[in-house]
Image 1: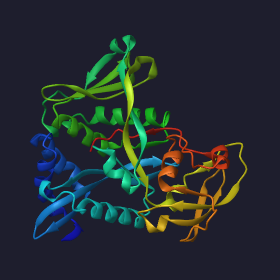
Image 2: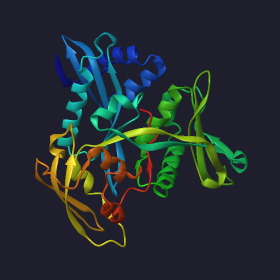
Image 3: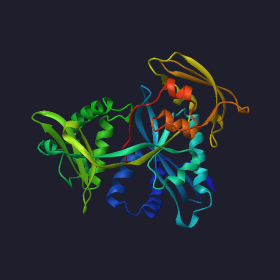
Image 4: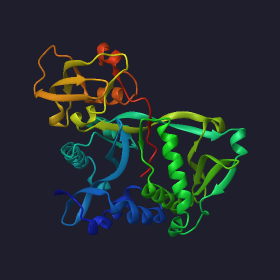
Length: 351
């Protein structure tokens, strides 16, 4: 058995395993996925004699975090052949992936789990609840301008380039006003999103109040339509149903992640010694010196061992707390009072 990343010309070989494990995805969608997303992703596989038995796919997104833009991996296509499950194949792939991401100095990685129990043993925790909105009465009266028509060929997205560019500018501004962690909607992102929507027979409308763009809404599905997204000013929306846990994340390089952490405005600079427990990434486990200011923070490793009685936390607790998803009991009161955590995450990518 060999673990390796597929070369670009080999990526289509993984489609057979995708089709076996994710039968709900249509051939039309997979044509889009393997034609578009696989242009710049990484597919890590466990194979033997040209047969792929397990895989995961690292799809890159430009994500704002800590006031900077990073290329982060959104993990999809996590699959093991039916006859090869419960042999530890996926554990090998996930451990290799985390090692590679740590070496690449990636602050964190994220995924949408089919079953959170699969990823919890590898340090992943929920950091984002998916909100559900619908248009209120005022929203229903907005003027709609469609970006293409349902069922158009994907190449038609190029003809919709002007609308997509406008939508991207508006959406980046909408996100930046409300969130601190989100994927940048550049031209490539918007065109791919358009092709993704078309692959699932979707329709995407821009919403206008008079001549002012105030939102956008998308439904997709060939037979039964469901809302893919609704982004709009609050005056035109209302809650549709209760938010649900959707995205799990994991810190993969502590030093890089901590650069984006700052003190609250009224706190004075501090330096503490902290033990961090990470069961999977050796470089993340040990005793650290953590200096925190209003501009950022610096983490320096002092050693691999955590002396008894040392103030210590798990990487899971750090991930949830610093990404603004609750206050785990093990986080010391001193840190809760002084450290500014992320105040808003929005990660609603599908693939």
